Amino acid sequence: MTIALPLASGRWALDPFHSSVGFAIRHLGVSKVRGRFAEIDAELLVGQTLDGSVINATVATASIDTGNTDRDAHVLSAELLDVERRPTMTFRSTGLRGDGADWSLDGELTIGEVTNPITFEVEFGGIQDFPDGSRHAGFEATGEIRRGDYGIHFGASNALLGDVVKVQLDVQFVEPK
Image 1: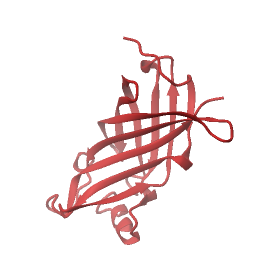
Image 2 (image 1 turned 30 degrees about the vertical axis):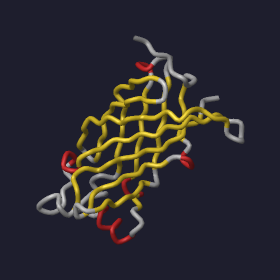
Image 3 (image 1 turned 90 degrees about the vertical axis):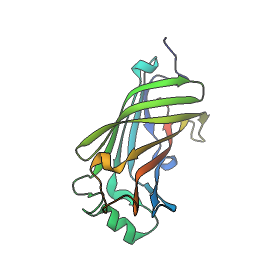
Image 4 (image 1 turned 180 degrees about the horizontal axis):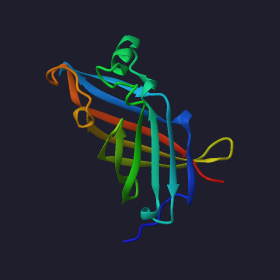
């Protein structure tokens, strides 16, 4: 079945000032630590149908911000994220399915040299005119990864720091002229 998209065809650019990549991970099994990555780049290539549409994104891992500089330095160290070996995370979509406001986005997430499949549940927020005359489309996407699947281990067990990382993206894209 061919589904037409509610977006104009073309290359939609990310609005980095109205977009964020956040995450949450269990700490000591009793609470969650939340953070975000400040440097993201993405583009949405909209075709006439779902099959002709793709999204690609890159996140600079060194741009992590958990609200605690000591914790950020530890996460970036070789003991955890190892930003020297893993300077970026990249996402490449492989499929999009859904209708209306609810969609699923399948793709491949690469952290360092490891690539694994991931599915994001996507909510289409709609399209609105911006004061400068441009049109913006908004999306919220949620998914989860396992640190261990990317070779990111810490401690003898996952009791100190959980293996599951919940990911939340809030993004706006600008319609092509």
